[in-house]
Structure formats: structure tokens, C-alpha cells
Length: 72
Image 1 (spheres, rainbow, N blue to C red):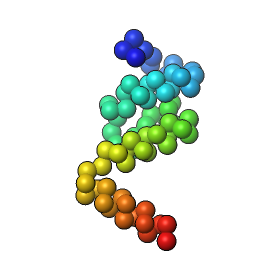
Image 2 (cartoon, rainbow, N blue to C red):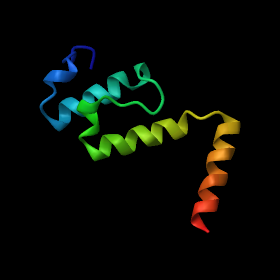
Image 3 (cartoon, one colour):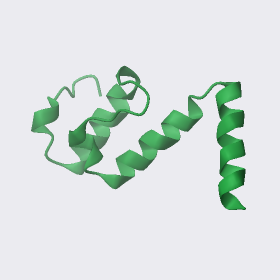
């Protein structure tokens, strides 16, 4: 993926968006996905999962407690 370096404004296909997301996700702040990628609901969901995975132990406990409260 090193050869892939399209600018966000030039992403035209789902493959372009996924390649960009997978190769640059660590560059963006938590809970931020560029608008050009947010048009794909699957990428939005993947970003949320990535945010959850990157939580530290205390944050994860809080997150899981909130999930339990919602499921009741």
C-alpha cells in the first residue's frame, strides 16, 4: 500500500477509500474520520471498532459498563 497515495479529494471507489483508511488510520485523531471516508458506512463502523480497540484499560471498563446499562 506504500505506492497508494491518492489525495482525499481524489478518492473515487470503495477500494480507494478502504486503502486510504487502512493505510492512514493511525494519523487521525480518535473519533475523527475525514468526510471523504465517512460516506462509506462500513468504514465508519470500522473506525468506531478501531477506537474501541485503542481504549486503555480504564476507558474500556467505562465503555463496557455503559454498554451493559444500554442493554438492560
